[in-house]
Length: 450
Image (cartoon, rainbow, N blue to C red; front, side, top):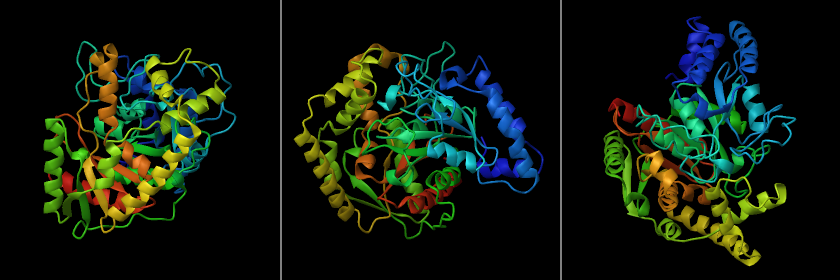
């Protein structure tokens, strides 16, 4: 796997070309022995090939844009002109094709990226596991067996994570409402970035939660995610600052996010923290009461928002839906106006409390997910296990969306072992600083061959 910078260098040196990259990616998607048929719901090969030629001409004329010739898979949640936005469902397949690109797709095109197929996802983005009963479930890059078995890819941007991890494309565009970029990135050994929600427009995207949805990239490195984020946010003129870990203060909260971890997760993340300490980062262990309070609290704000959109825009009663997705939406059916308003107020005051508690820290550090990727088959067979596992997978990521902050996951596992993500969390609008800290952490971890 190569970074965007390396790919562009190969284009410029004529050791590779946009057309050659595109053909390699198409061949991998169409490989009957690979995950392409499960990772992608559709791929317009002719359109992709047609975009390659003009990109190569720009490169040859020294006019390359930031993402020139880079293949970026698109989650089946975004409007792409001429394509049906299905949200991983069968319910929406008969709707008309989009007449224009969502703003984020238009920004990718304007930066030279080649939209590369629609990726599979959890239906309507409502789970962190990654299972789709309609179109199949792409397997995590780790733990695949010869008999077709394997482990969950993470959701809801399941195809996005596998598309990059398997080299089917260079990068992926996903959404993150409770971890849906960071979870598939962590389960597939990738970098994933959830920005502060308001920085990237969600227009032209089927919503799950209007208060929690955000749009972010999955890629091979922090630098790649930073380049994509600059394009998606429109902040092209904000270079990533260079940060030395000496002087960086990271909060390791004494909270549930560091408890009840799989042994592999605990071992890898603690080793990574020790490496960061040796590189000069100050890691402070301290209580974080607002976070502990939130993680033991229950609420149905998100379910109410999801159900309201579906009632108003689809007007069906669960017919054709994944039963597990519909069951989760039903949690919002009895939420009253007063309860929803109280939930909004609680969130606003909770964010204030968290911001005060985080004053003086550059980021929070914790495992991205409490467990390694579970096996697919048992979760398909057992509803109780599925919902319990889904809650565990989302536990360490969803609070970042409630905070309206930014979150970055970095791979921190040893080569050949189960992928494990190390999560860095920043406050609202601290995105570029968090990416810079993440880049410094990535460098330190890579020096330890992690």
